[in-house]
Length: 262
Ligand SMILES: C[S@@+](CC[C@H](N)C(=O)[O-])C[C@H]1O[C@@H](n2cnc3c(N)ncnc32)[C@H](O)[C@@H]1O
Image (cartoon, rainbow, N blue to C red):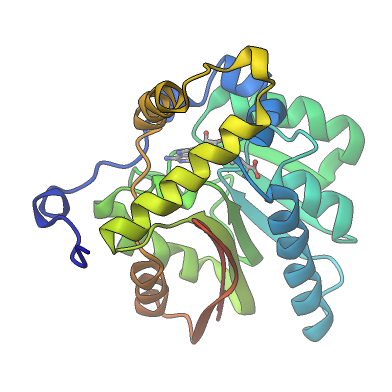
């Protein structure tokens, strides 16, 4: 068994996700597509809101201000919806690099939650991310399914900026994709991910041959260009950013919820 990551791959700096991936069909059919590729997403988001509620109670925070990074389209299966629905008195500022995602989030959430939601377009892989509309201090910064699109170059500085935008006593609560450093185990996790997607599709809508499906899944996945790292890298990055306590509180194959307290 190979225990070392592929060094030649590691030496090239990863440019982060391709923001063009998140438009058109991926906005319009978001919840359906997530139900196929994101195993136990509901459980992860229920836990994310439970964690926020726990810290609100602990710090007697009655109307938490929350930044949701990579907020998506504000449909029922997204982080912003879970928070607005389950964290009483919360106000969510959603930010996403996709204009279409923010348009959808605004039209899905503002009619239902009014001023408790506001949404802005900005890309965390640029130095200009903290536009005036979001450049504030938050009780919590949350993110689900997005930070694994950070580039290598931005990972350290961005996590430091996240730290600086959280009030004392607040926390970063994020659910993000990570992959084992052990090549054989990383491949196992990947196969499980593809198997889950295959099993969600009705028989007539999927190729008979699993291998063919796996290849087309990988082709689509490559377009998103996830910057995979193992969870140690993420824990160290968060510690380095200044958080006084960092841990993983939930983990399922390639997804983990990190809590970083300030
Ligand atoms: C898998 S979706 C997660 C959406 C939502 N948080 C949820 O719970 O379903 C990933 C989101 O991250 C956004 N994203 C990807 N790269 C980004 C970047 N560089 N800056 C800001 N948002 C980004 C995408 O546009 C997309 O809406």
